[in-house]
Image (cartoon, rainbow, N blue to C red; front, side):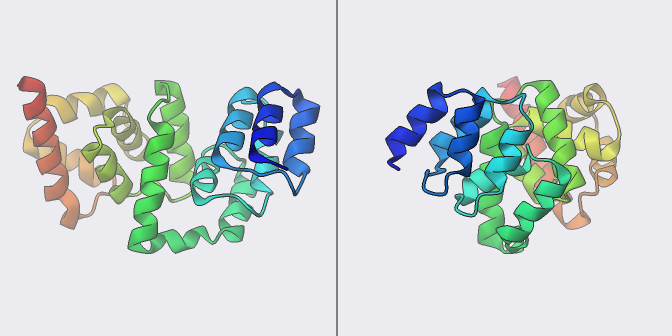
Length: 198
């Protein structure tokens, strides 16, 4: 099946067409098709789960699905696509970029849900949070620190924006940021503060 036909079906088909499309092994599940299906049928839990059952997904699509699928499907997805390989530096960087791209347009409530999902799957790492800080995705960082430290987003925001160094360090330690990364976080936080004052 041509990519263009699969995308057209994803764009205009009803849920029955979507299900048939996803289960058709000859239908390409590229990023455009998957994104369209996931957006159009966002309230249908079965859609991301069925997409995740495919064995021909791109790494970027797999990473985005991690945020949407149920726990059991997430485990199968991780096993099928060997997501543990993301512990390698290059792969970890690719996963981080894909996650940050996915969450960039999310609302505050969606960010909280996404960070909770990542945290439950042991993927809300200090490296991902530092990448978010460097990428200027403060909403994601606030939600992440809030979820890990069990504090409110408002408190986290105040600490990041104007608390002293000791308070910032205390929050980062509570969020399980290793001592070896504290300076990196503090430097980036200071850079964000300076940019806001400029």
